Each structure stands twice: as structure tokens, then as C-alpha cells.
Amino acid sequence: MNKIAMITGATSGIGLATVKRFAKLNFDLIITGRRQDRLTKLQDELLNDGVNVKTLCFDIRKTDAIENAIDQLDNNWKNIDILINNAGLAAGADPIYNGLWSDWEQMIDTNIKGLLYLSKLIIPQMMERKTGHIVNVSSIAGKETYANGNVYCATKHAVEAITKGMRIDLLPYNIKVSSVSPGMVETEFSIVRYHGDKDKADKVYEGLTPLYADDIADAIEYMVTRPPHVNINDLLIMPSAQASAVYNHRD
Ligand code: NDP
Ligand code: 8X3
Image (cartoon, rainbow, N blue to C red):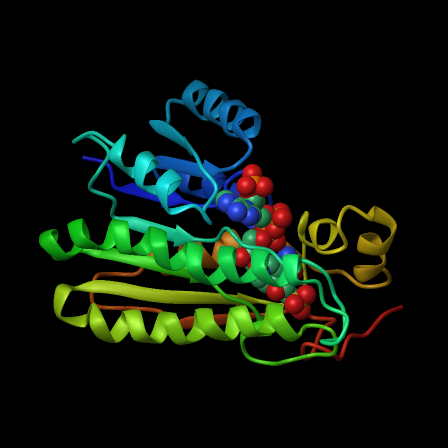
């Protein structure tokens, strides 16, 4: 039987790149996101390549929507072996005194609460079967705080704490818990952060070579393909042109 992997935020960026890598590893895939059109397109491509794939379209901030989606999984799909908690975003880049409540709520509800809600629903079957691997997508923003990053950094610091807490609580159940913490990755991340302002988003990557989504997918593939006795707790991955959250070298 193939392993089953669920990847959140599969419609773009790191999630999408991870789906493509996992497809080559012969995993059966549950792909999630809010954009059904993108999920369907990806599903068609994967089915064409002979990959078993199921789409679950839900907003990870909504407990009812997540519960309904997970309830849809029949016996062939409910025993998820690998959960990649990737869905997330930064909304806005403002000093704390100018931040929008709506941006703060979106980040906290998605990056922290969404990750928790979904994990809570997936973990019990892993505990019962005494097997599983959860990979949380954190960030350099989970380790450092930078100007105008305040609430986004707080959400990723929370992901770091949740990852460590999960690892301790799930230790007796043979469930691995890992995180991957990227620096700058060129995806739709900055377009979303700047509320659709593509010019502003492009400037983030100007004059340097950022990471690409597949660089992070490569690291996630490495984590989930280690032997059973090895867990990669965390991988901090930066572009060569980025030394910390704030030090970059641009041509
Ligand atoms: P993208 O914007 O390209 O992808 C984000 C994904 O998250 C999309 O598939 C989106 O799907 C999904 N998502 C966002 N909000 C929700 C929601 N409410 N419900 C369900 N799904 C949601 O960005 P990245 O690929 O870069 O981001 C992926 C993860 O990587 C995030 O957690 C981000 O914080 C983290 N990260 C990114 C870095 C970067 O520089 N790019 C660096 C470090 C970490 P849809 O819109 O269809 O719902
Ligand atoms: C994304 C990386 O440095 O833009 O998590 O916050 S950063």
C-alpha cells in the first residue's frame, strides 16, 4: 500500500512544489487549499501521471469546513501517514502601530489556529496506528523578528513552539514531528503580503537569487524519506545571498 500524504496550501508555492515531489515518491496525495479550480487542475495532471489524488477544498480558518472535509475521507484515505502543515501567509508589513486588525486576524487564524485545528483532527488515527510524520512549515520569521514583521513573526514563533510541543506529546506514539524554516522563497507569498501589489512584491527579490519553492520541497522530501529511527527536528534554509532575516546581499 502506498503511503498517504496530506499537503495543505497545495495550490501554490511550496505546497505545490511538495505535491510534485511527493507524486514522484509514489505517495497517495490529499491536496488542500481554498482555490478549487487550481486543485482540480493539479488533480487532473496527477491522475494523468497515474497518481492517486484527492482534493479537499476548505478554508483552514473555519473549523466546520475542516471537519466536513475530513469527514469526507473514507477508509481508503483516512489513514494519513504524513501531514505537511504548509498553508499560511503574511498579510501586510507595517509597524505595530499601523497594522490592520484584519491582517492580524488572518495571520493568526491561518498560521496558528488553522494548523492546530487540522492537526487535531489528523493526529488521533496516527496515535492509534502508532505511526506518522508531521512537518510544519515555519520560517526564519519563527526565529528572528524584523521591522514591520511583528505579527507574522509572532505566528511563526508560535509554529516553532507548537512543533516542539507536538514532538514531546506525540513521542510515545511513534509520531515524528519536524519543521522547515525557510528564508526568502519566491512564491506568491509577497504578492499576498502586499495585498496584490506585484511591483512591491517583485522588489523583495530584486538583485539577489532567492530560494525557489522546489528548494524547500527538496528539504521536505529529505525529511520524510529518512529511516524510521531518524527524525530531522528542523531545517533552517536560506538563500546564499541572505545571512539573516535582515542581512541580504544585492547586486
Ligand atoms: P503561497 O502564497 O505561494 O502559498 C500559500 C498557500 O497557502 C496557498 O496554497 C494558499 O491556498 C494556502 N492558504 C493560505 N491561506 C489559506 C487558508 N485560509 N485556508 C487554506 N489554505 C490557505 O506562499 P508560500 O508557498 O511561500 O507559503 C507556504 C508557507 O511557507 C506559508 O506557511 C509561509 O508562511 C511559509 N514561508 C514562506 C516563505 C517565503 O518567503 N515564501 C519563507 C518562509 C516560510 P489558497 O489561496 O488556495 O487557499
Ligand atoms: C517568510 C520569510 O523573511 O519574508 O516567512 O518573513 S520572511
